[in-house]
Image (cartoon, rainbow, N blue to C red; front, top):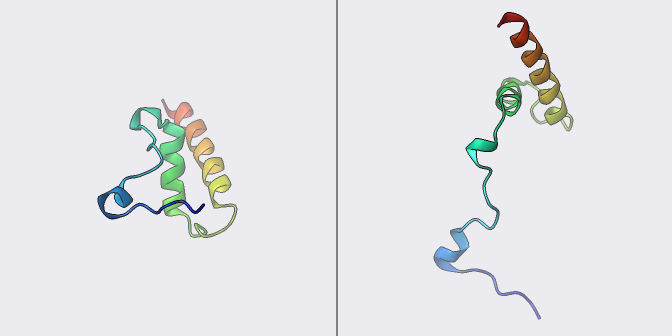
Length: 65
């Protein structure tokens, strides 16, 4: 039996709970900006590279504080 597709307003309701802003870390924040600034954002390793860059940013931040 096929599952009935949602219609109307029900189809607009997200099925996945969004991540709470309280769960976002400084590393996530830096990685997001590293990804946005990346010229290789479409690259398959973009997420890994963004987190690597974010970790480097966190280390540099610790040196400067």
